Structures are given as C-alpha cells and as structure tokens.
Image (cartoon, rainbow, N blue to C red; front, side, top):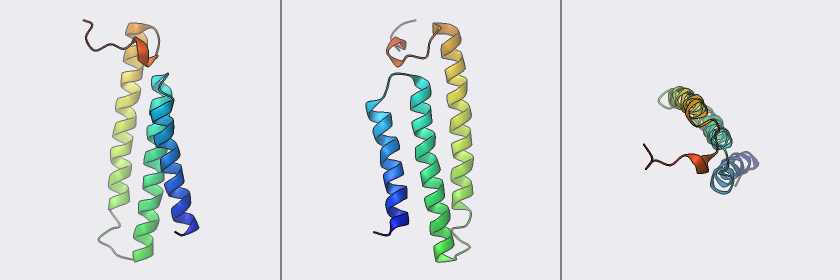
Length: 98
C-alpha cells in the first residue's frame, strides 16, 4: 500500500472510529462525518488524477456537492435540536417521545 493511500485510509478509519466511540454530542458526530467525507474527496480526486481519465473527473465534485448538502442538513438539525431540547447531547434525543 502506498503512503498516500495509507494516510487517506487511516484518516477515514479514524473518522469512523471517532463516530463509533465518541457519540456524546451531535456536533462531534457531524465533525467525524465531515472528516470522513473530506478524506474520501481527496482520495477520489487523486485517484481521478492518477488515471488521467475525463470519465472520473466529475466524481469528486459530485461527492463534494453531496457532502455540502449533508453538512447543511446536519447543521440545521443541530440548530433545531439545540432550540427544542436546549442541548446537543445524543442521549437526550429520543425518537419515541412526542
């Protein structure tokens, strides 16, 4: 495995482990998701540059657009839960309550 691939893989796995083990606040979960998406974007961009193909050149931009939509939705949910519940603790968010 090349050092560049190892660094992107380890960054993705670190984001996934942070998302799995550190689920205290909604903001920390969103930051872990953004770190995972950023490592995927950089890996796809370098992969498209490595193959020098025009067919793969739009894939990183499409992933970046979806990542921006995911970030805006996550921030909207963060603001909504902070206004209604007063905190962003994930333990206080129960879907069974009205």
